[in-house]
Amino acid sequence: MDVSQIKQNNLGLRLHQAEAKKEIFKAWESNASVMLQMPTGTGKTYLFISIVKDLLRAYKTVRKEINILVVAHRMELIDQISETLSRFDIPHGFIQGARGQHLWRRVQVGSIMSLLTEKNYMNTQRQRFDYIIVDEAHHSLADTYVQLFNLFPEAKKLGVTATPWRFNHESFLKLYQTLVQSRQISWFIEHGVLSDFDYVSIKPDSEIQRLVDRTKIAQTGDFVNADLDTMFNSMRIRSKLYESYEKFALGRKGIIYAINRTHAAKIAELYSRHGVHAVAIDCETPKDERQCLITRFKAGDIKVLVNVDIFTEGFDCPDVSFIQLARPTRSLALYLQQVGRGLRVSEGKEKTIILDNVGLYNYFGLPDVDRKWQYHFKGLTDVEPINNNVIDDSILREPEYTLIDESKYEEADEQMLVIRGTHHEITSGANLSGDVKGGHKALPIEEFEIADYYLVRGNELNFKIYPFAKKRGKRTEGVGGCMYEYNRTNNQIILWKNPEHNAAIIRKDTKLNAIIAFAAMLLKIDMSVVYQIDKLALRSGNEIGETTSLFDMLKMLGKLQKQY
Image: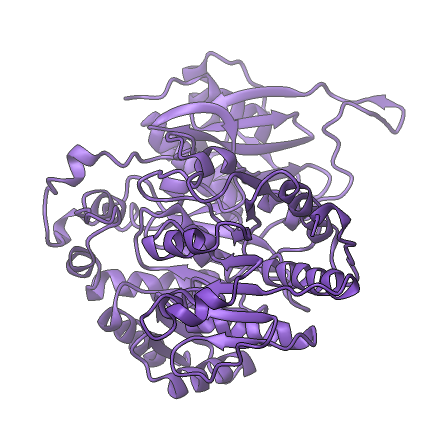
């Protein structure tokens, strides 16, 4: 049947889903195999099952037979797909494990591990599938998927994923001819499809970040799990997890990503000792027990789930309001899948707090950085902004140390850095456009850099601070999300020739203090110089009066050269 003749019913779909669906059918007109990229939490399953329903309706109208296969690699995903099909009133069978088979049904849900086994191979082949849909298709370059695609060369294929990315930068073009790319995460947040978030991370020059950078790499491309356990499964580092939770996310419901079972159990024990109902869960947790724990978590009986590789794909609990990253990874896909578990919208949830205790921000930037998925799909390398640190394979192959050296810890260096503030201000009446207000001409917009790390844009009335994106340790012209926004109408900050006053007023604003302290560290000047505004003016070659605006103080910092 000509796909161009299939009528699309978009009832119940959001704008972005309807757009993607239209593009998929259009791509199928000239391509046999199409991949869809759409962020975690934006309704990929609902979308492709809407496509299934359109196909069934169209073939029934012209009295033609059709066979559709939906493939996934995990039991949880298969169950989720089955539940959604049932909500659409679509009868379906299973080709998975020991489940009973109903092969006469037009839609089959199959496990990639079961479809091509000796037991199921002939039954699978006899189905003569017309359409094959692959969930979490970033896994589909594995040999089993290639064999499945080759078994049905005439079938139309659709692979859906949030992250068309591979460790080895392998191209997906050998299975999919084109990529339909949805909107970026930032668009979904702006339009209320995904939750906004605040982000807190370790400092890029912290001892923990240095441990991450020097962890051995496995042949898979990710860090060696045993090495991660040696490096990070210590009481000292685990205590930092709870400290950051207590400071930034206390009382919230959330998910922690751990290294292994032992690490997860110890984290859960730590949180429980502090009165937080936390449990550990992993793939070895018996199915019934695991389902019971998840049910209790969704009901609110359990506050924190500490998991090992369970809640990266196919898990949906919208009221999760904090994510804690305690497992280092070099996988962009894993990073986005993990943080994505917290970005679903839920009634009463304004924002999600992301606690990055292993510095993944320093590799991948914020979750809503615009990604070049078309490049990743084609297997092109060197396209992601790396914010602060560089993964240098020559360093990683020869770690400087394998055990934690307690003497290297400086408490100030190990404090968490606010990347996107945990007390985000919603400003009103901000004027960065140069408009005329109240009969007075607005101040012009200025831009300047601080320490080759921050971009400041605005004027003394209103301004914003952004971090520069970096790649291979070098600054690019791109910037990340706004880290700090100042509006003098809401919170006027005036500095005097009085260091005690200046220190008190800057420290009162946690985000501002963190930004200035980090800039001072890069510039290798003491914070006392910042507080003594006359000394800062002397160093930067400025003349000042009795008072100085915050904007002018930042401009003085901007005139100082970063020290290397």
